[in-house]
Structures are given as C-alpha cells and as structure tokens.
Amino acid sequence: MAITEGNSVIDPRRPHEQRMGKVIAVRRNPACLMRTLVIRWSDEIPTIEEMEEIEFGPLED
Image (cartoon, rainbow, N blue to C red; front, top):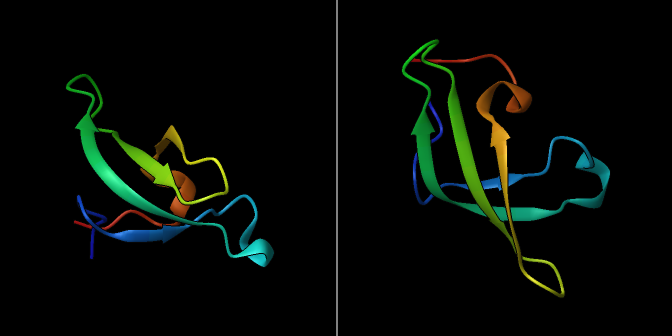
C-alpha cells in the first residue's frame, strides 16, 4: 500500500533508532511521477524534511 498523508513512518536511514515521523504532505513530480513525502519528525526539536518515497522501499500503487 502506498504511503499517504497522515501515515506514520520510521526513518529508513536510521531504522535501529526507531526515529518516528508523520507524513504531512505528498508531492508528485509531473515529469517522472516520483512522489516526495514531506515528513514531520518527532524528535526533541521537531523538524520537517522532504524525502523521496523510493527511500522507504519498493514502490506500490
């Protein structure tokens, strides 16, 4: 199942730390249909970061 707004995710770059975040927006590049996720990480100082969906594993429809 594809990642959508409101989903909770674990940072794939640091899975052993169990860094949790929430998807606050999903953007699609019209040229290649690659989706970019805007994630609010729930660290001590909350940060917002954009990551390509492919970083979270195989893409699904």
